[in-house]
Image (tube, rainbow, N blue to C red):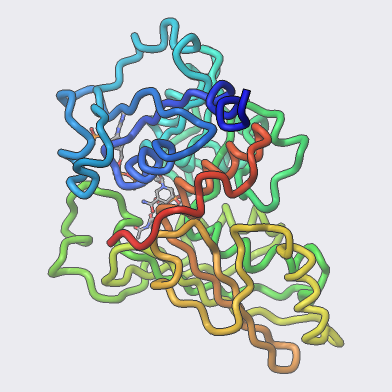
Length: 349
Ligand SMILES: NC(=O)C1=CN([C@@H]2O[C@H](COP(=O)(O)OP(=O)(O)OC[C@H]3O[C@@H](n4cnc5c(N)ncnc54)[C@H](OP(=O)(O)O)[C@@H]3O)[C@@H](O)[C@H]2O)C=CC1
Ligand SMILES: CC(=O)N[C@@H](CCC(=O)OP(=O)(O)O)C(=O)O
């Protein structure tokens, strides 16, 4: 048997829920080209008629023949015979309700929403506006920041894929935190700008073409603040901004370093963390969202002046901040190469 035949025979079968939305569509595109995962079905909400994926996203016409079907819970019956993995690109509460059913049906679940990211259930009413219905599952759902997930965590079956702004922020700050380089009591200040696809495909006045310029929002109370703080184990000031571009996040972060921490210490921390991580690029000029849009990379760059450090992090919110990170986690869980299915492609505006 040739090696290509053995890959085909061991393919994992996957479904995508939320396939009509922006991050779900990215999952469909990535999984349809993945050499070790087979996309067997894609679903949107129950109210929809079946519709060709390329009718929802015409850029895929002639490339991706697939129907997006309405999801119904009756599909859970016998689902494990048709698929092993479920990727959820749904609103938080829809994921919270559906993930336990998919787990009970025997599937491994990668949830792109925030439904299982925070480990303290008391944070859900404050930051998500509802009480968590399955607090017992929070501890069983590893936080899915792919570069930092442990082998033990990969044995679990429900993955809370990290949020978009938190991915950009935590990839920039965790090397410094883990190396003990931050000044005691230092509060990283994170200013991040997102493209409009971060708000999803549904129509709203605040994200319509004539309304979007560049503005901050979510001061102190955005749900990504506790998510970033949980990952870092320290307080942050996080201010998101909405910019008038389609996709990408640029996070500019300033933080104080411990007395005596040198530029060589900072470089060593980043190299130690990422020199063997294919999806993080330590770049030698200030990152540009144009260079990561349509890719699964996070670009990181920093400059130090005395004990003050500024780190800049750029990702595509729909890829490294959502769909590609979910696929990266699946690659890690099933022992495929970490970047499998993530390096092809190019800019998709
Ligand atoms: N956009 C981004 O940059 C990022 C998004 N995320 C998260 O991913 C998730 C999806 O976001 P995004 O792609 O932006 O959202 P969209 O609004 O673009 O898409 C949401 C999708 O969910 C489907 N859906 C809604 N309710 C249900 C339901 N009850 N049952 C089944 N399907 C349902 C919708 O179907 P229909 O079209 O038929 O209504 C649609 O396909 C969210 O939790 C978001 O927080 C995470 C990181 C980044
Ligand atoms: C521009 C914009 O509106 N961005 C969204 C965050 C993107 C997202 O969907 O958040 P998760 O990563 O938590 O899933 C927001 O601020 O709510």
